[in-house]
Picture (spheres, rainbow, N blue to C red):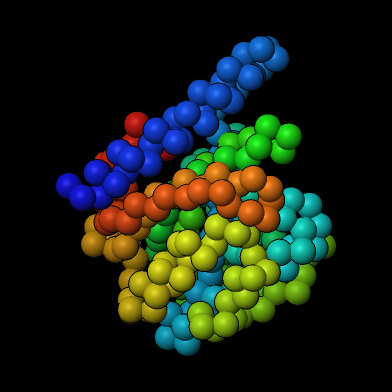
Length: 222
């Protein structure tokens, strides 16, 4: 189908990056050659059309506005559980029903050799605020934290790839009922972004399809 055709054009870039990293790691005697796996979760209010964003006060991405996330730990039972753990650690919220989290996409990021780690695989989730528990609590890592209208998301103060996929993901989210969960018909994507620095994307490709298509086409890889 058209989605898999788009994906077929995207994967060579991803696989080339993986193989390049594998070769360099082999020379260094490092066993782990795959992309570093991370999560990113956005809490949204579908009715109010707002998204919860945090300002990264320290660490990777310092100074940028973003959702909440981080690396998947070996102790996490699943990628989804890793996303929930990171959400709680960074802003104090939990998720009432994990199945209410929608995996809207998988992004691959390649950075120059001078920037490490070189390759990221990021699983991106959206969840409605009505499905969260607890109170928003700012942390040393994320402050301030605020709800922002979809129309006012500060893309000029976020990661350079965000404008290529987040507006469409939020636009789709705004059309769903508050109690919507995962559906095979929900808009979903796989993206690849080649950065020349932490603030500039040299090339990118994004393939959009259904959640089922993403699962079926990406299963061997992610």
